[in-house]
Image (cartoon, rainbow, N blue to C red):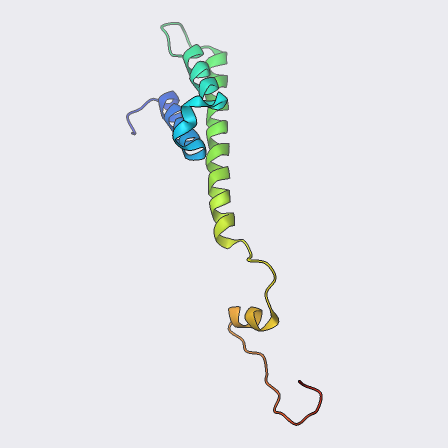
Length: 110
């Protein structure tokens, strides 16, 4: 994939991220149609380099970075997110500690 031009690499990356988000129905989404339309409108032609094409490439790279970062953030959040309230004994065991146990006969424990 290193032989691809930067616009084609970004295009393929955007399509991959859309496929990851929407599954097999990604071709029916507005985002897919917009990406296809923008890449066709700003396609490489024989004319000289223009600012609009550079801006479109930069914008598409930024959008690809946003999609990738969001996907990776959600994966990390899902992996490390807390499981809700835990009891004191369970929290102590997570860090390798044990709660002290009182020998019976004090009268205040149950």
